[in-house]
Length: 330
Image (tube, rainbow, N blue to C red):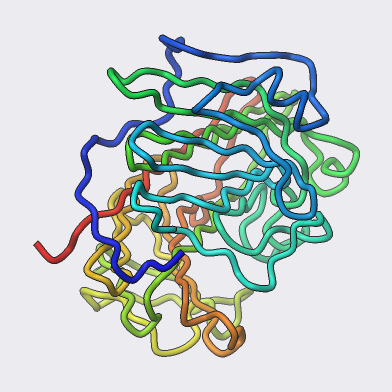
């Protein structure tokens, strides 16, 4: 869907995934569902939450808001691959080389990086993005007049994960629509008898009109790690630009970033990311290393990287982000 004409003024304020009991339809089941039919029977909410066979037959969940916005998330990797405005404009970007047959993580949308962001002792970006997550609950909560569709999925340890990350854990990911906004919340619970550390990120791909027109604002004065030359030994720099623009390969981790960051996409609109708990912001564009698509997207990622999270047994860590479309021409 073309993004060339998108401008929007928000009708609703930001709201993270609600933890209070739903006031309307809510479906919670403990039995693991395996087919789309079973998922719809146990968790589907007509007009708000629907499960479908996605590409390559991989199950996905579709959220629809009464205002006309929508979102799609594959259960494989708990990867949000679409977030559309009521106009039909797509905000996220999925790369043309993306595959959905579970042979590798989905390249685009909002993949997870957990329990490791970037390179390290385990596989790149950890394992959460290449495993099936399990649906735990859905709801469509009036707020106060429209139903906010929500899905919650969980990931726990397995023999596969314990070989890389020798701890028991429960990751809970909540995705919801509040009007035209997309809310994402990640909670990591330590179910082991010993503390563990981790790093994480939401690797958000956002569609832009052209990368040379894209601008990220809100980062001036921050210390950042420039990973463009060597991601394992990044250079430490200080950002002196009011607007971060793109003229070559970009891979920067901005430490202790503000809770509000915006990406101007080149159409008079910007995507605002309002977060809590994430602490850092990653800006990435592959430039000529991906000649077929680099001009069409920019990654602005919420991350927990500069200071890894430490979670004691029985404790948890959580972070949220609300994505909104704003008009920057006013």
